[in-house]
Image 1 (tube, rainbow, N blue to C red):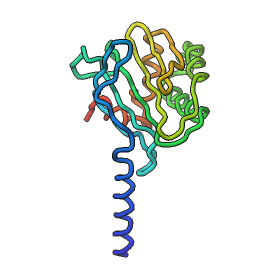
Image 2 (cartoon, rainbow, N blue to C red; image 1 turned 90 degrees about the vertical axis):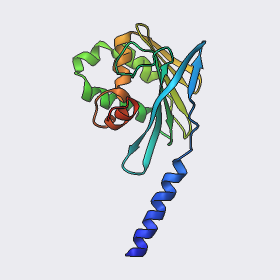
Image 3 (cartoon, rainbow, N blue to C red; image 1 turned 180 degrees about the horizontal axis):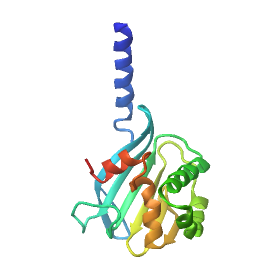
Image 4 (cartoon, helix red, strand yellow; image 1 turned 90 degrees about the horizontal axis):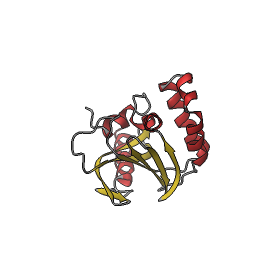
Length: 183
């Protein structure tokens, strides 16, 4: 029994070490002359070992105060994947969370915008990333591996879509708390 516990401990330590420095974390990112500084990052997992993605939240460096979601501060949410995931599965996961958070009536108001985003989704392979640029009063741009995938105007839609990761859903609450530095 003692041997099994020691062996399990070694496996756990090896597994956590192998993911420790898998993706490079940048202190800032820039696009079109604008600079965002790293605010926080977190790993989204299913279960204890099954890492899905690394999420990093960047805030416009002109806004140094603590960030609260939603607010009128430009942000970038970078999602880098540990696993291969089909586009259909990514879309379904987002739909499930949004359906839990919002009424069908509200989601129907954003049917066209959601369809644009869902149609732009690509299957991911390990290391691939999406960057979601939120511009207050303008909307959201979703970049897929440094290429603009879709741009959707509308502040309300942008906040609704970002709530998949930054909203109060039980599946992503821990991720949200880490990204927004909520204890």
